[in-house]
Image (cartoon, rainbow, N blue to C red; front, side):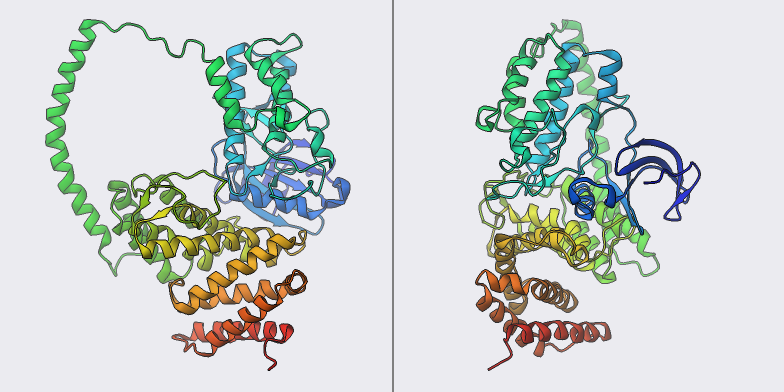
Length: 562
């Protein structure tokens, strides 16, 4: 392993400023993007030095996981560079001090601070554990927790993290840090949310000090029970415990004086009258701005139209026209890059309440099952999520750090497919979109872990392959019936991707007894492709390529033999 000198370049655009830290298989630097002047954390990993023969899968796992997360306490990935002997992950630079150094220099914090730190960490774990599938961090310790100047805790280093896999007897690799990792993390059973809570319990113990007592110490003792069933069963349960027993004076209020109440009433009346006037004025102004943004101005550039539409959404997030016009703008272009993809997804998720899309954070219901959220979602809102997800699944091109190929598209589209798959439809059309979103979500989950550009990762197990075949059947049926793909290009792209994956894992699919379904799928795709009449030169070339993939799959499965 080599340590780079200050001033050297990585990837032709990141200039090393200083070394932040190093370990047995990686170095972390503070680097500057010479193009835009931004500062990033650059983690260079040397796979051949990783323990346990882990090599590249662990590196890519960290990148894929971070890429799919969206939380203010977690770093974002902005670039991924693969060299001859190393892999470089460029991510947000998290300023602050690791908690292990804080504890070493200052000793245990006071009780109020210790509770605050514990709540922040538990909230991060609650976010990770409520993803679908849940993400198990597996290396919680003070060294991986950064205390910022604002008092907020951030979590770094996802090299040991993994997605929870229902039905697995044990973890593939027993990673973690001795002293913090629970007994099941050493190959005895599969780790789950309770495993992270064990490590949190050890960490809380360090907050409390050697003579720790009180609520936090009691929470720590319960977290570190040897039997997982004796621990808190979720971070949410731990948070509820702390809220009940460590609330302090949170419920007490000082009396309010009569004069203050009177002044408040006078000011409220004044602002109410003023507000009525200015609100009436703003309604007319906002409506004019909104309608202008929807007009297709041939003289405006793509970027100008994009900004106008985002402005219209900000002015009135409850109306659906601007969302659909914005998505249509990208659909016409047939391309969306990393920056635009992130912006669109964040816009839709942030405005979910305005679009009457309920928040759903449940892991006990399979996506695509109608009625998960309980509250009926308007068909237009479902259409917005559906078209935006399809756009990213078919047109996402990465760039700016986006992972390439099938994996990049799956990671970009899956948050929206997952969100849609958990809703309850208001009518039959919305129900069709929700069911199809469930199929696409399962396909995205498969591609994000076993996509063609990451084929050196571990092979999928039998349940993964069976789920993919089932989801592929649903998606192919929707293409054939004309209910899914927004364009001919999208339909051909989907069939091409499915054909590639089915060919790559054909032997495993046959081995689990799905050969009949595989042959039926191959015939259905071939029959559909034979009847397609391309409406552009681009689609004609894509059709020929897709026919080639489907033909080779047919020959390999024997579907063409009569």
